[in-house]
Image (cartoon, rainbow, N blue to C red; front, top):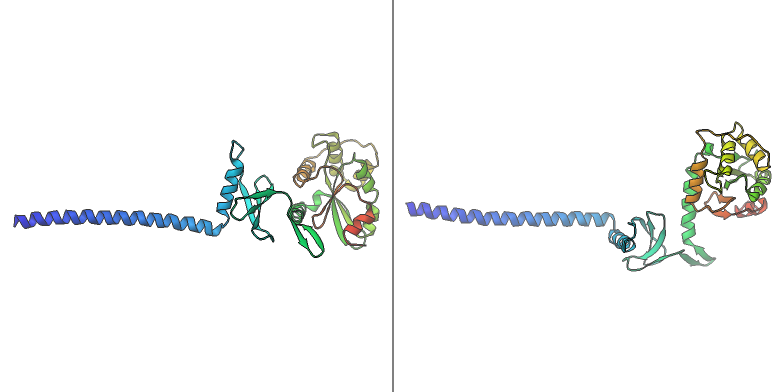
Length: 270
């Protein structure tokens, strides 16, 4: 009787240990499968994750500051993707991330070469400009129908800004609205910035800006609502390097002065 009891106790312990080993193995297997599922889910929701990690690691190596990938998009070019870094730089990489190039991507089409990189920049510029409240701009609107508009980063001390401003009436007559944003070439702490601030803070900004561009000496003014510094930073972010910098409604950047008739032609209004 005791032997049976003893034997039964021994068998129960062995069975328990075997069962415990099976349970542990099952738990490990479940954990591995769960991790694999989460990993697969992550890669499924972001098919470019491996590429992002490879590009980021390569650019951050050698003591460089960490560089992260902000976005990855397909391009019309087979095997190439567009990679936007968190610093705004755009590069083009193979889908495996083994090779990449920095520069503009062109498409060869029946009507000629098309700069696909510039097309993207135009969309980005247009989106940023459209995000600025019109009330924060100094706007010269046509009396009749507004057929299109341009946004101009301007400085009152710039000769070609003054020259362009003399043609605002001609632009308005052709149905082109002129929207001004401030871009003091000397920076937000310069005398030019103070003059622009004076115009933006005036009771009649259009009149004040026109007088300043004509060389009229006016008392300087400031106000808490001045958007000059913010607009200067916006211009720098989208690549403005001088004034006037003209942005069309589609986001095309025209660096420097163009006569009213040429601007109308660029807009397709002639």
